[in-house]
Length: 363
Ligand code: 6MZ
Image 1 (cartoon, rainbow, N blue to C red):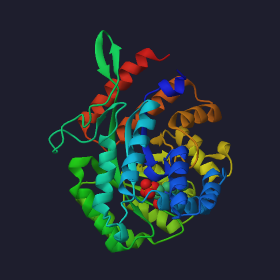
Image 2 (image 1 turned 60 degrees about the vertical axis):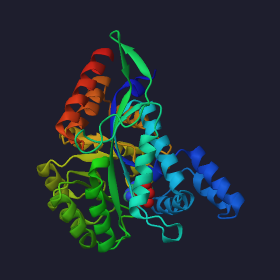
Image 3 (image 1 turned 180 degrees about the horizontal axis):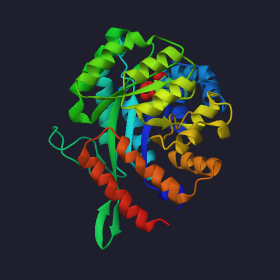
């Protein structure tokens, strides 16, 4: 097996609808095209286009969302996305998605999220741990999992899955608050935090702050898309909020870097996404190198593995070849991510064991 696939990995920044398999997306679009709900050729063109600006990516998300409105579809894509991550040895996955209300179809934010949870439970290829024991759901939540013979004892491959509810920057304060409340109510189903995402040129920080504050005070972890486009004031306000992590951090000036460095807030790095959307002009200029040199906490992630045709193994291989980091440094990087997961100490302890035993097998 490819070394990058064998490496146990932790994925902390993956958007559900951005991680859909292209084949599934095309199949669903074709089905809706045949029913006359959409014009398939328009959608096909948008899906198959390779290089997209950040603006075009958000147009594509509107297309994807048209294709994935049915609850059964949400369940299907969730199952496939978890299985795809597990297949490349992702041992802990934080999957984020924006709960979507659709009055015409009688879908509420809650029923959308229940469909996501069902998708996680439907996973058959590996065992899934979705929520801490004692929070209402024992683990594992499914009966899946191949048995691997390990030291003479049968061990099933397992993936920890935790869910983050995204607030889209197009939402109102009330709608953001509804998502925060829902997240608090769904903690027993694996929801551990809130993400703020969506088109970075849309919306104001002040709109989302009450919901984010409410969620934080309720004990949820928060991650923010921060500095995907230049916006000094917003970046500073976000860092002052002290989120548990931030995503991207592409457009930081000197002052923001200093603030980030002293805050020690871990950064979710999405190399391929940043390059394809031209948030960063060239991979060798990516801030990964500076953050790594400064020993700033960070974690490699995919962002939207379907939309950007990547995988977490590819992101590790890319970082290694671009920045000249050997396997032991890359192993360390993967392992360091344990400290940034939005899960309890028991999960962190189990992840340390997984990495310890993998470290003895991988050279
Ligand atoms: C900001 C992004 C994003 O929530 O429908 N999303 N937000 N920057 C990005 N970088 C490219 N990639 C994805 O997944 C799709 C949604 O995730 C957010 C957008 O709001 C997008 O609509 P869900 O599962």
